[in-house]
Amino acid sequence: MSLLQVILLAVIQGLAELLPVSSSAHVVVAEKLMGLDPSSPAMTLLLVMLHTGTMFAVIVYFWKQWRATFFSSAQEFKRFAWLAIIATVLTGIVGEIIIKIIEKTIFKGVPHAQIEDLFSHLGIVAPALLAAGILILIAGLLEGRQPDSSESNEITTSQASVIGAVQGLCLPFRGFSRSGATISVGILQGIKKARVEAFSFALAVILTPPVVAREALRLHHADHSGFAAAAFPSLLGAVFAFFAGLLALQWLSSWLERGRWYYFGIYCILASIAVFFLHHHGY
Image (cartoon, rainbow, N blue to C red; front, top):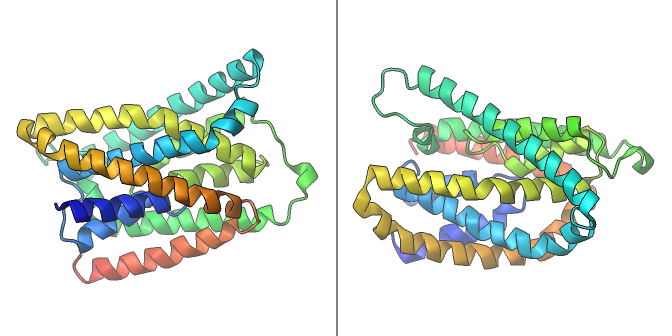
């Protein structure tokens, strides 16, 4: 893996991360086209580090909004913390259950099989993109039919629980956009998009560190010498993903608020067709 490939993947990740189009799916497809193995420990570490770079971009960009809402008072922070804990716990439970089911069924009898082995299969990425696209399309179309007065600026415990559970569904599948799914579910529950968007990205910031630690440990167990070799390219990728993410946020985040959410659903559906085509041709 050359530094040029790392930079290219970082830019793709940074630009796609803040859109509900599954940045990881785009990175996986790019890796396949470059002849890289997305399921290898080094590549999964790189992907997680790219997410880390965009995570810091999210913190920098959304900090003022979070401070004015979730951190505006001790009471608001306690309420946000409760909702975040509930959502994150459900994410872990749902995600772990699905991962174990997949490892015990699809990979039954395969020694040392892990969920990351699915990452290289475009035959899995394509339907995940399709499912995310349909969900986003439905949420976007229904959103346009609802009066603004019917939307809530607050998130209830039950709504946060649903968002957390849906986020858990996204963990095992590259292509099922985490932000797309969680924001769409929030919209369908009648939460204002700006509010659920801020909550969704806050959950992403909470979720990223343990995922990074898990992948670093996985690489360490798989290849002790590989960690050092993959560390520098992954760190460089995180830096480029950070700046690409900031640039994307400056003009893309506002575009999400203009009632064009369903456009991303259409894009995901078209992207799934393209991925199906690549899979059919042996990628």
